[in-house]
Length: 237
Image (cartoon, rainbow, N blue to C red):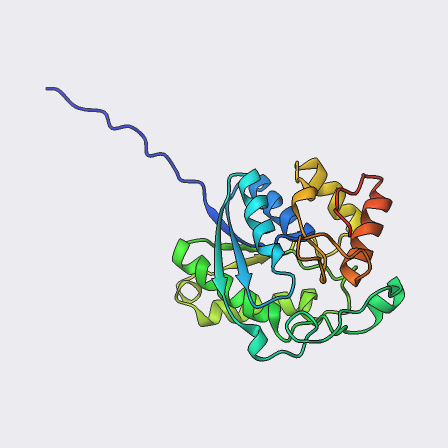
């Protein structure tokens, strides 16, 4: 009697959704997700930001690690209220103590709440149970939606509000950079092979994509490379 032996099923690499702005932190997060054994899927959000060149950067970053990237459009300029989505000047030349001591005008109302909700929806569609976001509560302590308390609260709410959540297959929101300094983030990304020359962090870049070198984001980025002892590949105007 002849019997056929079936080949063992090949398990698919689990997916993880990574919020991918094209900046330094999110690029590092994408590399961390891949290091953690996931097939990362980047989610870039075109929300009407003045620094739209970061959308192209998100695609460049994803290509380097052979990751898929999806782009979704949500027009937050309809609300305004931020220097990133309204005709409000971007603050320049502020000291680091000033940057971290108050909620700046570059804060976009409810941005991470919106972004995490969109990413949770993509997780459901893809069957992904892990969601990465590059929030940091050290260098960006002025932003309320970058705190650990918010992330924990969102995860709880997301798993109450989704089909996968109530079926016991909810999302885990991972924040691998939340307690790292900018220098530590750069060091981690460098070890993982991130090409920071492809990323855009500036809030007020030139039309060609060169960084202003003077906004809060540029200030923190420059300091991070200096403290990490790693050459800064940023193109400054």
